[in-house]
Length: 332
Image (tube, rainbow, N blue to C red; front, side, top):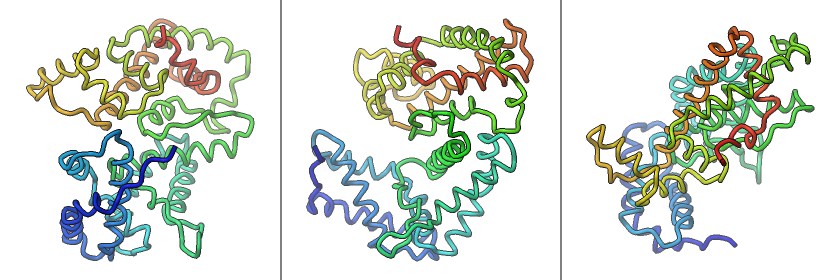
């Protein structure tokens, strides 16, 4: 069933607000040549999706809050780059090229592979495919919901997965996440590129480390706090969306709600504050980092493995375990 179309009357209510946002962007970046119509069309699409995703029509206050959360300056440069504006591309290269390269080096296993990822991303961002005579840029999929850096992290991760699949036909990688957080944990457990140390370890050696890998994973999960287990259970086992988890954390009686209130009180913040998807993503990122740290510590202290051997165990996690297996303990 398709969501109902948002009528012009709804959109017209916020036209003055959109015009004000556009004028602010033009003031900050006057050389991008993005038209008011182009900018408004993008925000109208986002508003339509926002309104269609709610069971009841959003109120004016809720819609203005949604507009407040949009990263309009990031959207402005993305639109300009999608249109091929040279000044915008120069600014993008200055602001984000280094970030893309650092991220690619972190995810990939060599500078050569990292450069291939960045080059592929630039091709996607510029667009080499034409539809109805118009060039299609990857930037066209960015809506301003979340930072441009966060969106680029997802693009980098998916590009790395695609390149991995192209060179590893025999390895099946299941559905990859559209949130950068889950990508971060998979990236930390990424399979080595051919030619690395992984190829030098034969099947017998891998069997030796498999037991240590499974036991260390179990130990890592057992040391998580209750709210961390619940958060991962919601996201990976019950497959709730970030927005759904955020709403659960706002509900009275929710274990996550009680933890969130304590967290806010410890920071002298308002515990009644609304929880956004980005907040849930930050919680997940911290969980992933904690799991990885506990996993490494267990392998090092209990199983007395060195750094090279730990990397073999990380390799085993990515090759031998699916997401369901990794998070199966949470369902108990």
